[in-house]
Length: 187
Length: 187
DNA sequence: TTGACGAAACCGTCTAACTGGTATGTTATG
DNA sequence: CATAACATACCAGTTAGACGGTTTCGTCAA
Image (cartoon, rainbow over all chains, first blue to last red; front, side, top):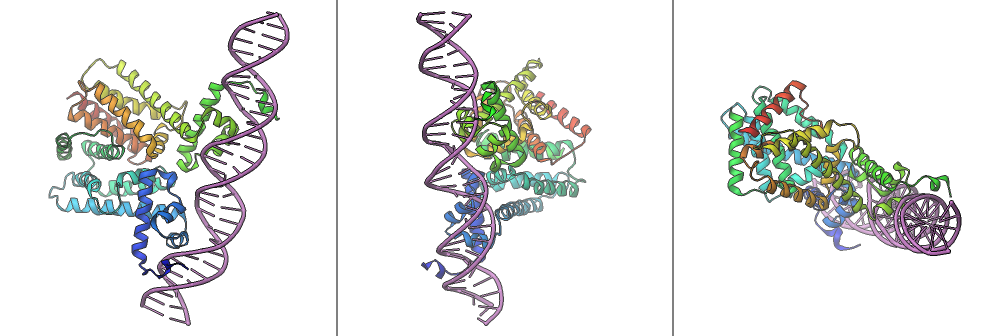
């Protein structure tokens, strides 16, 4: 009835936008705020349209989570390409990718927060487990030292601290921290 | 009308039980499953009774989060008492407390999972921020080295990994990891 | 010792708003 | 014209919370 119908159709864009709105809601207001009504309302897409792209709420969440994992994979791969040293390369890539993702303004806001919120849903944890297992098996030859494990764990800790806004250290302290972590991957 | 009324009144016990039920729901089925109906149903307390103890859902969640923080504080303090070396003591206490909390079967199940789920609600993050800030100010003299920060971050990472079931290493690998972390706090 | 009485600890019901999802359209695009 | 990309209307169940009632408890006077 309204003019909304006459808008140009751009399925990929709309789909992307829906994911971004869901991500924003998750990071800003928590999981309980991610409802179909809220997502459709905040994105200007009708609920019917939303459910056309994602047949159920679960599928929406899974798609969002997958897009975050893809983004993480891409960032890791990019960081690893610029790294000539095989030993500990994946761990450094993981560290640098996580650091890079928090800064980029374009695209999904607050990568960490969204991931966190999604991980609070038990159904999505299995996906994360699988992801970790695949990587730890793939890079068992170069990244299985104790110190590498510590660096990866600390990376998760940084990710967590960023998301919670705690541990807010200065830029120089952060630089020293990261430098030390890189150093640990090379031992 | 039913016999429920005639039960002996034990407000503290009921309150505690409500918190435990909420914690169990959160860890097992995620934040979206923590509803007033679900909590009152699973605990055998009526919704009216639930709302008597916690005037709103938010207050229920905050009370639960506070009880978890108290438990963490107690565990840290206990670990610190057994540690004669001042340098890095808080960091070691934090590490050992987090490791200890995941194992104890009594009381609230799955401390990590509950905390995680609660942290996915933005309103509760401020409480966590405050907690971290207080501690980092209190122990600035003994626990402000880069390596100590790394250990604390890695502790968060372990906490996260435990909760997600990823990084599941063997007992010996875990022992070596912890040993190395303790070592880092002493540098 | 008792018993009255206000407060605290519950219970059961009601509701308006919201939930995920369906069913059925209408429009644009190849 | 067939199909994908939307929108609109609707539904049955659930949600947080308000409300008024009932039972127990602590206290203090008689």
